[in-house]
Image 1 (cartoon, rainbow, N blue to C red):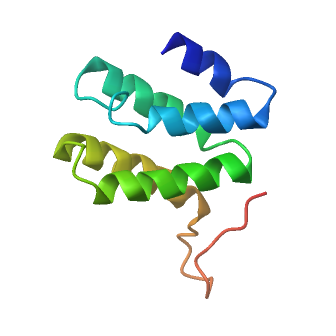
Image 2: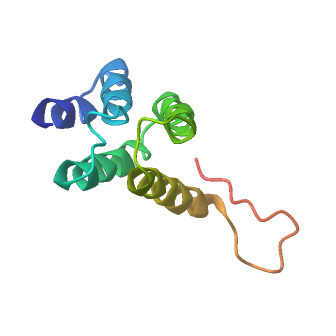
Length: 103
């Protein structure tokens, strides 16, 4: 986990992307203490550039549809994704399109 953490904060975008995708593998998302640690690192990865986020979105979708993760882990991933997507949702009733543009 320490090597993945270092790669997540690397200056090299491809290393960050690889580390993010590795965190989404069932071996890292096993139930237990490492699960919450991996989810917290993924939360940080979702603040990185589009290429990294896009990879994470695709892999989360693949992992949730798959059968290798337990239901608790899938729920944790969905909660992570929901919290991230709410950053882009405008809750004001005055807007016609409830999406907020964030650079």
